[in-house]
Image 1 (cartoon, rainbow, N blue to C red):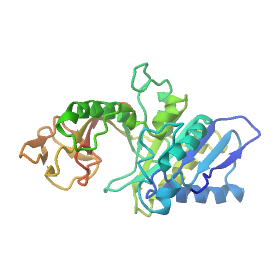
Image 2 (cartoon, rainbow, N blue to C red):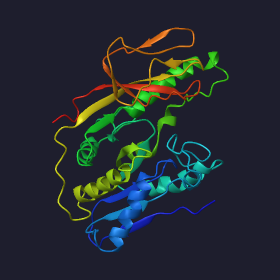
Image 3 (cartoon, one colour):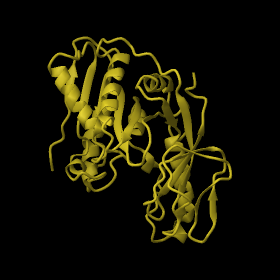
Image 4 (tube, rainbow, N blue to C red):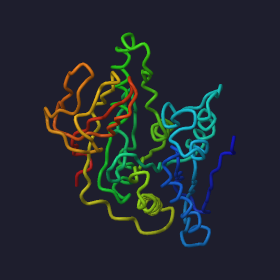
Length: 319
């Protein structure tokens, strides 16, 4: 097993503690390239660390990265938690990564995606004291999201995932051979874990895996975050003036191998209420229950797994 690696810079002046992750999924390398570029800039004195602390993790999942694939033994960004009995490679990463996250105040997690689309940011819930994801720092996440250099924000991940897990639990008896994610905690990744230990966090999806501009999107986001938090001493970037805000509200699973989309969908394609999205293997049509957007359509989803998500417009970050 390769050693875990992080690079840390600390100022003599107090300030926020920011951690930036690259390659949580091994085939998503834009964050790695952006972090490598930033390290050179800091070491050459081109970027200052004027206050606080910055920790950079260029490659979070080294096994997946070495094999140029999404995962090592499993998805690191699901059910992320320390374990006293690590078995899979990602268990060992979690036992190192979770305490590292807990030692910081803010997380910027850099990702990319497979389907066509434009960069966007995932943020957490509104302030709440509920059971799924209690939180009290929504305004701080929103402030970062508005300054990353993208114009679309999405929330609602964990609550939507938990609702999907509940539906899968009801189907478990009728689908004994399917790999069903029935534990709501399975939706907990880096940002959800960071919130659970008192911090706040955003995930930036920087573009397609092979988009030559994605590393630049990631690099700009890091610089803007450093400036906004006062770590670099650079001026605070102006917030995005025309942010599109969406909330995930429903996840639809593939229930049989013959389930098929009605057309080739891309993330954030609009869907009209009643529009056919796909057809079940038994011929049952799947139609949009409301006007919104389709998110993360996955034609290669396995039976019992997430097939696509639906999002609707939100007023949360509209300005």
